[in-house]
Length: 316
Image (cartoon, rainbow, N blue to C red; front, side, top):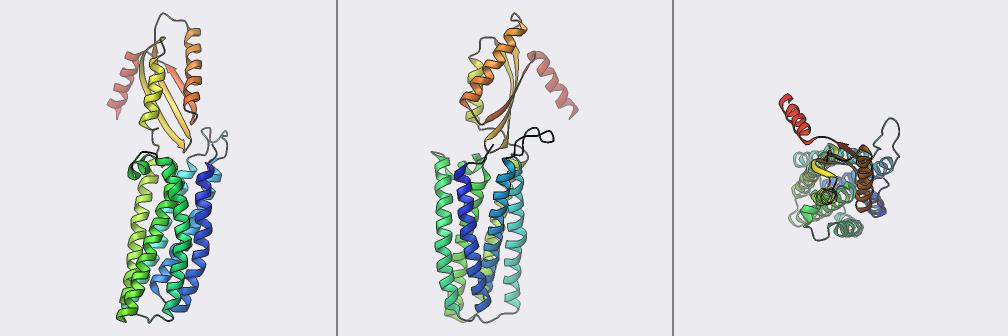
């Protein structure tokens, strides 16, 4: 399954914005010696690399299925999203916290502080643009759901990953601005160091939230309740089916769902009728839910199905 163009545009916009911001922040940090600005520069460099990894994950996940990976490569996107979370924590948060605590122990005077203000202003413009693109794409997806529920329900990690990163970046810029302002007003570099520590904490929280969300996707999440309920409704209208034993779904990618159904058919119908019913059900389900790429339907006596479940639970 190819990634949605909207998701790709969000990642590309963030990549370009963070790349430009990283260069300006590194320049300002080198000239002024600000720890907060150095933390922000590392933050932007990590974000730029992260967007590159997300684009790579999107490209890899769109590869067609082959003999070694019969269900495709869709879950590679979830893997690279998890890698992004690790990098934010290990590099972004780690460097920011280290720089902040080092500056507390060995304070250095900040030179040409107004350069930092200019760079922070420019960075806020670039970050604001990238954040707006990600926010509008996410709002388009969420519909009437709350933002928190939409984040939990989303199976496309690219949009909410960029939105989290850009939100953290905006908070980091605000923290850096306040730290520099207090340093200038009160004449003590301690506040610049504290701003760096605050940026590290912001990145740590962002990384943990991303890791939590991507972990659920990586180990396999079911399709939404609405999709499962819709499938059950389609099955319930088929007169040849005696009972629905089980409906199992799993996201192999944002728009790639695996569906397994166990059905108990009436005993008085022929094998040919069962085959025709299964074919019709597959067509109806895929027509309504095109994201369901693969469907496996098995005919099984309900009592035997329940006995197998009981045996499996007893062996756990």
